[in-house]
Length: 441
Image (cartoon, rainbow, N blue to C red):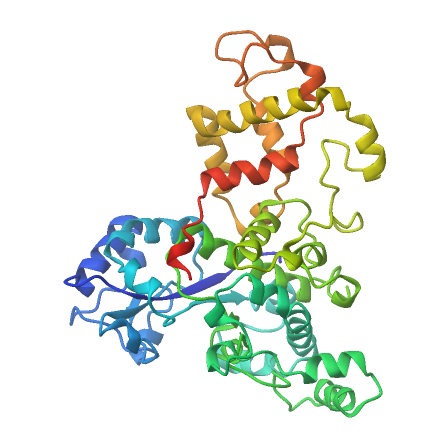
């Protein structure tokens, strides 16, 4: 996607005694008064009220009728429609102490909704004004938007078992709750049976200039109904959470799914060519051996879906092989290049490097700056990015100069060249972003 435009909704309970104004004041302290809606009445903003709609470019503290389990203290934190990962992190870190995290662990109430914007790309803006309601209505009838809508639903429906594996039990499809109603089976049926009645219905929808997206269904795990109002696809499956890395990684994942369905170079890739596993989804999304893949694997293992999480390697067509610094060679060749006698030394070297990323202030800050970037940049990070960061402070020529290297003095180039940086990337990220699972399920 050429430009990231996204927003989030976080449904949470406030602690006893915490006022709406107190929460807003902390938001203001984090991102400034210009980005936070501060109503004259000082209270909560009605969900989808005129006040709510007239301030979509500011963060709001809104009401929501679905938060009954939060003992009258439930609110919905709604970002401005074009927020950023950095801004989201600032807001959450500044207000986390006001959220009743313990109550969140005892309820299945609330969710984390993500809106991914798609109408501000140049391909659309050349013909339509996405800020104009009439033009948005026209866009919903265009074949390009309809094809994207169908593709998003096909992707989500095909990989639904994987997506179920990385959310809490209460948010898995099939338990008759409106917010996690699965994608209509019509999408995959039409795709898999091109001569059937659903396929004919789909084709009629695509060719009908008066028919408006979506073709089938709305307001489930994928909600295309927000497209006409805000120009966004809404993803509604994730459970409530106030953990920064969880919120951000779900945004990245939904962003990538949307991007895969829109970008011309990737929109015709068939998800059915990939296994229904974490690696299958990551390969389809072109993630390579990056941190988002590792995050999905950790979650699937945590929730007990070991078969879906099992490592199957990385598809060499759309990613890179997860072995050392030799991505272009077959796995069996790479294995033969690693001297078994060096295994203990390699493990020791990797442990030292892992510690350096946590304990060396310069390296730690540089790593956090690298992780605190845009959705697109983070989605493309691989082990080589961490290796480059590690080597940046000095070249190999000044290895022993004071302060010029992060490793211990007994550094050995032969051992270092066998270090598996993709493996290290996952361990480093795990250390820096410890998942607080008790908040989620």
